[in-house]
Structures are given as structure tokens and as C-alpha cells.
Length: 184
Length: 188
Image (cartoon, each protein chain N blue to C red):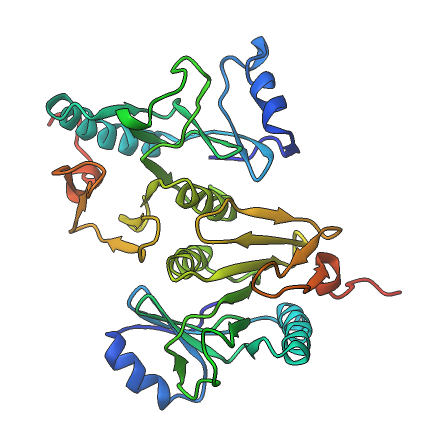
């Protein structure tokens, strides 16, 4: 997601300020950053988020949020494109603006205007919180899987994203989360 | 650093390939299974040399490990990285030091980030360094700041007025960032 607006403030000031805004903001490295995307990245986000939400609901595994669901991660405030919190970690859905539980899985869809430095900082802080991160790259048509304490795995469009222990049985072909860009 | 080749290779094939005579003068990394040629620029090399210099002086007084410059490779899992500055404590040095890429991950990797470097490769390197227990200092030349990545800990940002600390890995080691970002004139 790209950044349109940024302002330095403390996290305490951010929590009060963000509630009064009409738009969504993240708090990364001491700055409030407006969350924006592009249309194609948004499609990817809702597609994988939708698949995830249906699977989690059918199997009663926990809670899934979309591109406006916020989380507190290592003192920062993030809004992943989609995220999953397991029922074992959090029996009831959160009513907080930014869930005080970091997600078990965060999905970030890259867009061309992304600030990759910010994404890297977010990934490292997610990992430190025990969160698995799936980074989806619509240009390269690959998924990158970041898991705490484990090597990064890059999966091409013919490969399979596997929910592993977090989402037992959840499997999607990477190519299926990228809508076709040519006329059929 | 620029990307010259983009070809997938197994770690074993890579280790043989880099030893070919025609590759002896070149530096390659294996990132996400792909071969990437390492190309630096003069400013990045200067900053890396300064950091390496401070580290060398520290290690002369604290004999706890070994430092390498921008031609010292390491095996980070099945990846092969060449940080601009690397440091590895003696207790992690159980392998063959004559290997092209030392058979262990460094304790500290310094990566100088210049505008031409492909950032998404840095994301993967950061993830693999953290998984291998390596602390990473990403030194941003344009912004004059350093991002500090430590396994299991929040990312720290040190701006140009701040001080980098060696922490548990290099106890007592500190670098005042102004000392590495200040450009000395030839007449100094």
C-alpha cells in the first residue's frame, strides 16, 4: 500500500487522532501513514481475504479481517490487507480500533507505489510478534512466506500457499489469487 | 548494487559455479534461490569501510571474533550472502574458513542501502538473516539513518544524530553515526 499522508506523532496521540479520521492510517516508525492501494492490488487482497474468511468460518478457526482491520504490533499500528487471528488466541472478536492482539497471519499485497522500506519494517515487527506474513507480489506473481525463526519461502504462481499448522487444510494455488490481466 | 543475472540455481550448483575460473574476480549472492551479482558504488564502499574500520579497532581490544569486508561471504541457511561488513563470533566459527562462503551465518551483517538497490531482495535477506539469528544494520545513505533488525525484537531506527550500539553481540561497541556519514575532505 502506498502512502499519501504522513505526520510524526507519538503512538498515544495517534490512537486518539486516528479515531477522528475518515480514512485508515497505520503508525509505522513514529509516523502516521495513510493507507492507500490500487485497484488491482485491492482485487488480490479481497480475493485471498475472501477465500480465507470462508475457510475460517466453515472450520470455526477464528477471525478474519479485511483491508480496514487494524492491529497493534510491537507498539506500532498496522492494517494488513487481510489477517487472521485464531480462536485459541482470541476467543471473541476484538472491538478495538486496532486489535491489541497481533494477528497470527498477516497478508500484505504489494502495489507499485509501495514504500518497501516500510513493508520490511512491518514484516520484521510482525515476525517479532510471532505473526506469519504472506507477501503477495502482483507484478512478479509470487508469494513470499515469512515465518518467525524460519527461512523465507518464495512460491511462484504454480505453487501452493499452505495454511500449515495455523490453518490446517487451507491450500490455494498462488496463481489463483492474481486475477487474469488479459482478455480471455 | 545492481542485478546482472537472474537465474535459479541450487545451493550446491551455486557453490561449484562461483569457483569457476571465469567467476574468480566477481562476487555473487544466492538470494531466494537466484544468482545475483553484487555491484557496489564508491560512496557505499566508503561508508562500509568506515564501519569496518571502527569494528576492526574494537576487535583489536576485544578479541571475540572476526570481521569481514564486502568480499566476505556467508552461508545463511541455503542462501549465500555477502554483507558489506560482517562479524562472526569465535563460538560460531566451527567450519572451514577457506570456504568461499563461510559455513555459518554472521552474528552481524551490515548492508549499505543505495537508491539503485532492489529493495524486495533486501526484504528476503532481512527475513533469512533474522531466521539465522543475525543482527542486521541497514545503513541508508540518502536518509542518513540506520535500521536495526534483531531476531525477536522490534525494529529500531537510529537517525544521523544517534549512536549505533553493538548490544549483546559486540558489548561496549558504539558508533556515533555522524562519524560515518561526515564526508572528510582530502585536506583534513
